[in-house]
Image (tube, rainbow, N blue to C red):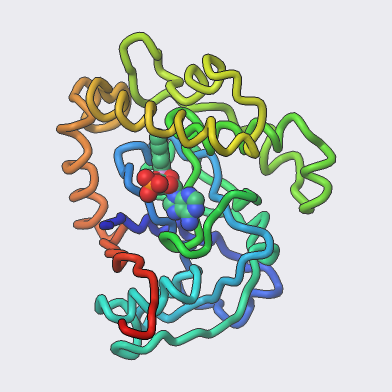
Length: 258
Ligand code: ZZB
């Protein structure tokens, strides 16, 4: 699986826990398959109990991601020490909640890292960027946080990290409108981020519709089909140093016979 890692930059001044990293450029490294949706970012997602680290990618840049992903990146030429992850700081998802971030292409200038309980630590980087207009999981998780003060309280999420953030329409899909994820979640009567099976189906539908029938309605490639715009936007992000390629080795079932 080939992901695009979006470099979501931590805004200075850094909080206490991150003081040791001051002077470096620090990014939450979010793995995505949909770089063309970056205009509509409203937040980042992390797993509260997930284990993360801050890794030196080169002399000046630090990525916050899962250890396994740092190891993979080290073998893809993205580590200060070749083939060896260099961890400056051990972190948990809880340390990341509330971090203010500047993310490439996002219409929201500053967005925040928030808790999502369905994040898989053995997939991508363990950090996900949230696009509630076009990702059903993101739509439901943001909806839950907005609707449930007790959930915000449980994870120490401040109202101002969540409540001001509205869905940003970025792609028009015939019959589904410009908030495709919301449309599908309502149609399927999905009630929360814990509705796992339905969300898998909703994601499939949204991917298919968005990719095959979607048209960009914002950004440099407004008016173009998603199919055309996707590689153009991806290349732009890569060329400008706002993203890198991340290949995830295939998962294999381990056995003694190998
Ligand atoms: C932004 C985005 C916008 C995404 C969208 C999707 C959609 P897949 O097909 O299952 O591999 N993701 C990445 N890593 C994780 C993780 N560790 N745990 C949970 N979710 C993760 O899905 C890849 C997508 O799943 C990635 O692309 C990321 O969310 C999320 F409009 O990034 B995406 C219809 C989906 N739309």
